[in-house]
Length: 143
Image (tube, rainbow, N blue to C red; front, top):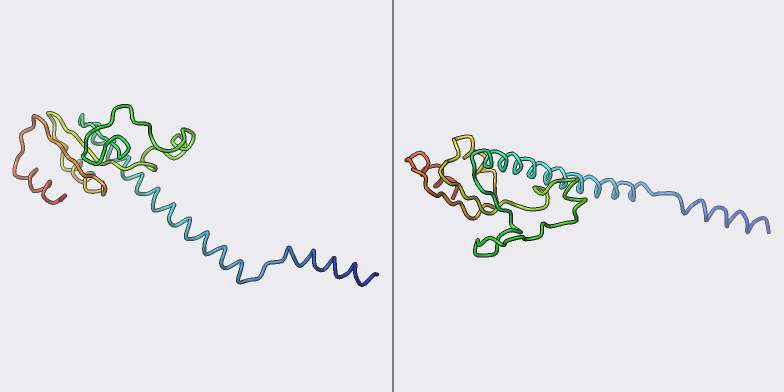
């Protein structure tokens, strides 16, 4: 009877033990997840800077959930994710900028540098603006 208790105790204790290979696998999976999260956060930060720069020169910025496949805007489109998550990480973490409309003003050279960072940008509209050769070169470089 004493021997059975020792075996039951050993089995319970063994259940809490980890093998070194299991620990290595868990750490590797956690590192990959953290690396992906860091890259996504950096991309969201760069997009947020670009959006703030473009809004500063009175451009309208539309995210992917606000546009259909043809680039037409969807009025009152609900943003992605729950509100608490949008408050926590920001809309730039959950959505990508796909359309920009600039009226009367052009982004300066620094603004065009921000445009290069928007990898998912599909539509760029210029309304009532005069375009110089430098601007055409910048736009051609983006395509």
